Figure 1 (tube, one colour):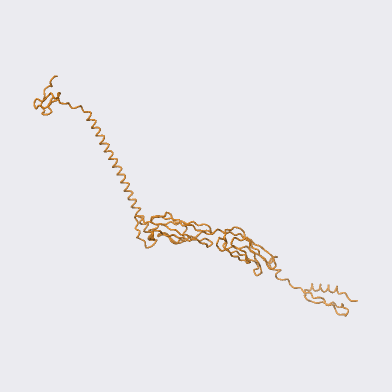
Figure 2: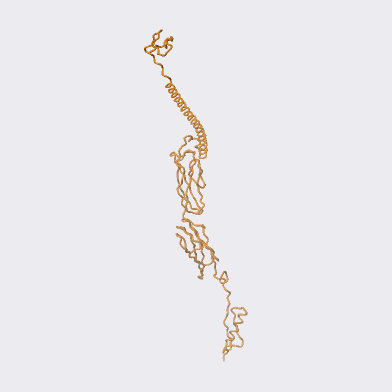
Length: 348
């Protein structure tokens, strides 16, 4: 009757497990088949665990937060979205979602696109490894409206040379703060970087048409830029020597200031003289009126006195001077013609 090999096989397995020897064959003496040969036991091998199952977290990889460049986007400006996966050497696939207008998903960890509209929400990315394990990551994104530069304002316009000019420009959208780079400017006004409003005293016009151009380029923090142009009409001052100091903008501006100061002094002087002349004229008018009033008063008084004098005695045609024969008033004691004393008038 043949021997049963079950107990022998079980013993061989136990020996292999405890000895840690892989691939060994064990024979049990005294046990054999009907031919008397020992039974051959199956070989047992114990391969070491694969490295992928012992490295990293339970999912096998990790996904970092989304990085934005620039941090605040802008319509019309290239935006980069990057997500980092660890370990980086694995095989991964990427699906981006909830993107702004103008951006489409691509199978990449670094997505670049140009937004075509304003946006403020959360961008998502889904990462899948070779064993179909999925992890997701989100990140907030803001896209501001595009940078726009309005028209240049010059005040006053037209301007008399030597007077103060104020130049300003309106900017909307983009990501501030802004940088203003002034290009063309009237003589005596600064060029280069300067925040508006810009105040200056232009000299005589550098243009034959008396219209000086003004230009500015505005840039924001996303390196987007816009430009604007304008002009100012400059008329020469009546007391300003327009040709002197015209060799350069700075010299012309200084000469304009000096001439303007001289004109101001002359105006002050003329203003003082004008005040004195006005006062003298008022006094003369008052004096003239007083003289006229005095003359009128004197004339009226004289007329009144004359009217109040007693009437002059009229000559009596019936009485004549005994000496010269001239008519003598009735009550006259002397002849007005010869001075001869007269007798008593006749009794009537």
